[in-house]
Amino acid sequence: MGILLMHRGLIVGASVLSLALAVIWLVPPFLISVIIDRGILGGDSRLLVVLACLLVGVAILIGVVDTVHGYCVVLLSERVVRSLRIMLFNSLQRQSYRFFLRHSSGEVMSRLWNDLSGIQLAVGTAVAELLGAVIFLAVVLLFMVAWNWQLTVFAILTSPLVFGVSYYAGKLNHTLTARLYGKLESLTAFTADRLNISGFIVMRGLGYDVNIDSKRFAKQTGELQQLAVKQTMASRAPIIALAVFPVLASSFIYIYGGAKVIDGAITLGTLTAFTTLSMRLSTPIGNLAGLYVNSLGSLALFSRIFQWIDLPLETTDAVNAQNLNNPSGQVSFRHVSFEYEIGVPTIQNLSFSIEPGQLVALVGPSGAGKTTVTNLILRLCDPTSGAIEIDGRELRQIRVSSLRQFMALVPQECVVFNTTIRENLLIAKPTATEEDLAESCNLASFQAFVDSLPHGYDTVVGELGYRLSGGERQRLAIARAILKRPKILVMDEPTSSLDSITERAIRDVLSDTLTETTTVVVAHRLSTILNSDLIIVLNEGKCIDMGQHKELLTRCDLYRRLSQEQFIVQDVK
Image 1: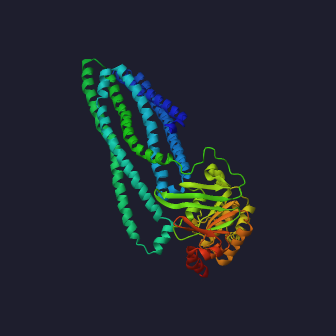
Image 2: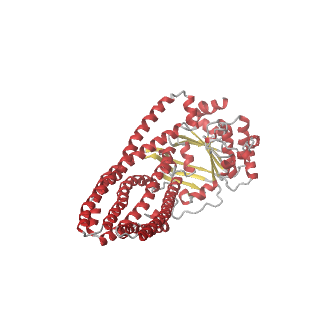
Image 3: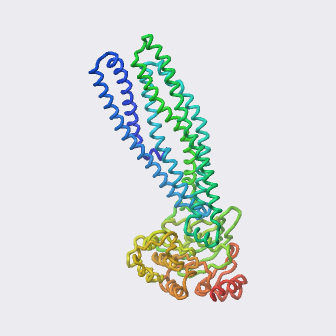
């Protein structure tokens, strides 16, 4: 209801136009009655011509008013759906890392576009039919009752049958709509996984038999088709009822009214006018019946949309949260634990402190919790217990928008968007100048590559950046992080796809140019570890030991084994 109130001006306008249409539609039956009784039966040819011309004028007026009314309804439905889409988009943007672990991009896209497109039709139908039908019925029935209440009874005699059919069809439509859009969501997620560049490479690289997916797609679309047919037939139930019941109502009117005409109780014009009005009544009655059916179906979609719009945010600012101003970059974990799933700890009682400007490496076997630590520093998720502090202030006491102004990330799987190199860089700093871009790209050993491209910074990199090599994507991601000049830089092995010369150059940049930046690196290569001020060794979410490379080699068995089996072997390769 709040969504509709945001657009109450259009609703009032549509209501006024609906009232105008209802009043204007009373004129044609009245004119027909006079044409028959006084023009045709009365033999007044001049009056006949005048009334016929007037009837044409009324028809044109109805067309104009109906067109304006239709425009208001369409505009209203578009604005309501746009408001809902913005609300859902904003809610999704504020969700935590955990949310996107649980829901695929296909699910998100399906709910954002498919579900809301279904609602769009329902909103337009609701406004156009509910307001129009209620106003028209009220005006016309009052007019008909005042004219001849006996004929009015026969005109609406079959209406309860229409609403009875609609009641049962509406309940069925609600169930089928929920199942239909649930199936559409899973099918959208399946196709989004398969029909993209990453899926293409993996499938072809593994020699996957695509006929398996073709059969699966055919099966799922067949199930979708069956649901769609059932849902459409349920929605059409009121239309089918209206094809039969108004004819029955007209029959009753002719039987009763014809006898009254023969007896001279009413005129033939009155009978004809009432028959016309009864047929006209079938439209708003059908609209109301159809609206009930479609509304129950739409409720299933609304519940799916608001299920996500109303999701509580996992990473919220404290009531007294303040902005972070000119931080030094000190990071502290104090007895931090974290669970993605209840009862399954990923991080347990983790405590350490990173001083401003330090280069800190996180090492450990797969599943040790290294990425989770970086996610917690970036506040992509909040700890289950314990506290994380920046410059002695707990993260929840710092506004998220303020916190991330001083942070940057270089993920291992370098995320590059399907747009230009310039737009990819400006994500870090939208106000950056051409000189800023050039400087950051030079520092990341990326500028020479940009200069070699025909369109330079305006080159489109393709979906997921697949027009670039792995090293080029990584240098772009590093240039993007450098452009921001962050106080805290999180890197998930930033040089894994680089040659040794470029890697050494970028390491020099990190140590010489970003001297005031606190850098946390998930380390997979020996070169990263050797340059670290502090190495934190993780295993099963716990801190096993911490110190520098030589110290840990002598006292930490796990670190010594990792160095021998992973880091040194990789470095030799």
